[in-house]
Each structure stands twice: as C-alpha cells, then as structure tokens.
Amino acid sequence: MTFEPYPFEKLNTLLAPLTPNTALDASVLTIGEPQFETPAFIQEALCAHSSELKKYPKTAGEPYLNEAMRTFVSKRFGISLKSNELIPSFGTREVLFNFPQFLLHDVDDAQMAFTNPFYQIYEGAAIASRAKMHFLNLDEKNGFKPEVDEAVLATCDLVILNFPNNPTAACLSLDELGSWVKLALKHNFVLLNDECYSEIYTGVKPASLLEASIAVGNEDFSNVLVINSISKRSSAPGLRSGFIAGDAKILSAYMKYRTYIGAASPLPLQRAAAAAWLDEEHVATSREIYKRNFELAKEILGCETPEATFYIWLKVENAIELTKTLYSKYNVKVLPGEYLARTDENGENPGVGYIRIALVENEIKTKDALLRIKEALS
Ligand SMILES: Cc1ncc(COP(=O)(O)O)c(C=O)c1O
Image 1 (cartoon, rainbow, N blue to C red):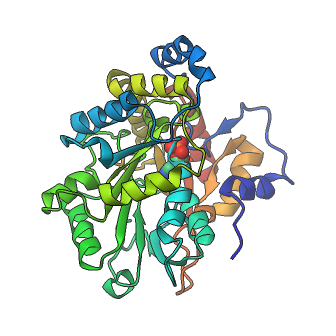
Image 2: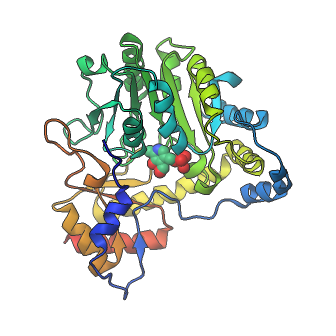
C-alpha cells in the first residue's frame, strides 16, 4: 500500500484551478493550529536557556521535563505516575507514526484498528508497519462513538482511539473508555488513546483512558497507553512537546527503540515545555476563546457546542462543491470531511457529507468567517 497525500495537499489540488475572492480577507479554517501567540513565559524560558544548545539531548528527556508532565497528569487526572510510566516525545506525531512500527515490527499478520475519520498519521503508521487496517467508523448512526465488533478486535494487535476526537469533536465517558480497557485486556491488544484535545474542553473535563484503566481495576495500565501534547493546550505546536504514558513494560521496550529514532527534544525546548506543562492559567485563557467561538457557531450556524476540541464537523449537502464555493466566492478555506476518512469494506466513507471547520482564530475573525459560511450555505 502506498502513502496517501495529506488532506491539505488534496485540498490544494481541489482549489488550484480556482481564484479566491480577494475582495474579502483570507480566512483559513483548515489546519488545527491555534492562531494565537505562544504565551510569553514559555518563549522566555526558551530564550533563557538557548546556551544549552551546545549539548546533545538525551532520548529519555531531562528528569525535570518528565516530572513536569507527571505533575500535569496528577493535577488534571488525579493520577500519580511513576517516572517509567511516561516518556516525553518530540510532539506526538512522531510517536503516532513510530510506536505502531515498534510494536508491530516482529508481528506476523499485524492488525491495527483506529477511528475513521482520523488523524492521517495512524494510517501512515499502519502502512509503514504493513499492518492490516480495520476502521472504527464514527458517524451519525453511532453518535460518533466506535462500535465494538469483538470478532475483529480479537484479531487486533493495536487499537488507536482518539477522544476527544478530531474531527468529529465526540468524547467518550469514563465508563465508555473503561469498557475499551476491558476489551483490551480480554482480547490482549494494546489500546492507545490520542488525547491531544483533552485540555480544549467547553465544560465538563474529558476523561483520560488512564483514569478509566484505574477505574476498572487495571491499575498498572497493562496494555493501556495515552498520548498528550502541548501543541493545542499551550498554542505552541512549534515547541514539539508531547508524551506517551501508561504500561511501563511496553514503554521500557519502546524507550530502547526510541534511542534509534533521533527525536530527542533540544534542551532549550525542554525547558520551555516544562514551564508550559506546569502552568494552567494560560490554558484556561485559551479555553475561553474556543468556548466563545463555539457560542458564535451556535448563534450563526446553529451548531451544538461539543464537549471538547475546536472543531465543527458540519453536515452539508455537497461538501466538495461547498468547499469550492467557500473559497472562490467567500475566500474561506475549510476541509472536506472525506479527505479525513476512508471508505470501509462496506463501501461507506463516514467523512462524506461533512466539512471540518477549525475555530482557531480570534472572535472577530471567527465571527466574520462563520457569517460568510452561513451565507454560502443559504
Ligand atoms: C488528533 C491529533 N493527534 C495528534 C496530533 C499531533 O500533534 P503534535 O504532533 O503537535 O503533538 C494532532 C495535530 O493536529 C491531532 O489532531
């Protein structure tokens, strides 16, 4: 199987023959990149330690970074992790791509399941691991929550969930996550939840798979892992800071594998990341902005406010045509849902009929863009 072009490349190809309406300011609502300044204290920590560039960073990261991340987990989820239950990473994209390859490299007939639509790295990882892919479709019928087919799960070596979900914004409750932990233990597959959006919530705080693991009595996190990232939480995707946490036995073997990857984070970045993971105030400020954006989306487009993320997964009549119209007439870029999903063995692509709108701008720009989308829809 070959690697698919990235959704943004497909969008560029779709829009290339068109001319945008430049009488209006360009509004880019495609990429999940917060359009806000990284808080000053994070930038200052980076600058203050620039002289540490002269040193090679260690694969395991500095102990202070590991500790800062565990403090975050403890404050947010009430879980005291041991240092060998968490590995700092260079953002989470690299983990999502290379962890499956580590886990599956010597498995015959490797099988992997993940939510569909999805963050495209999961698919790339499956291709690189030569793993058979099973799609856990998220659609209106199942309330955007994955349905369980135990016969399929019994064949899987790795299952990736992503809740809070990009792009559908769906969340799973503690109990729902707990049933997935039980399935992972029953069928002996590794269960990883991508929790990159856990901090971008509008009300109730989304549960972590780690909490669910403890709740069902799996206190040493056997077969259970989560990843989390600073990119959305701290408006710092360029800082490249994330972690993988959970099953210490798997993480110990993965750590050995990671020494070969060369994705150790430069020391000044580790200093800045530690400062960011330890602070909560700046995250609360961002959450207010995203919450306000969702309120605007409700007022203007009538969308229900989701529990988390900054995405609107909008059901529309012809997503491709609408995407083209939005660009050519209104100078607004959105992403057709079908670029984020794949057709399953029953011929269904759960992304068809949707567009993803990333509400990552400030209130004024968001309002302006949403009004243009409303006009295009009517
Ligand atoms: C669902 C999901 N997982 C992971 C990532 C990767 O984030 P990072 O590598 O910045 O930690 C993203 C980025 O958009 C994402 O949407």
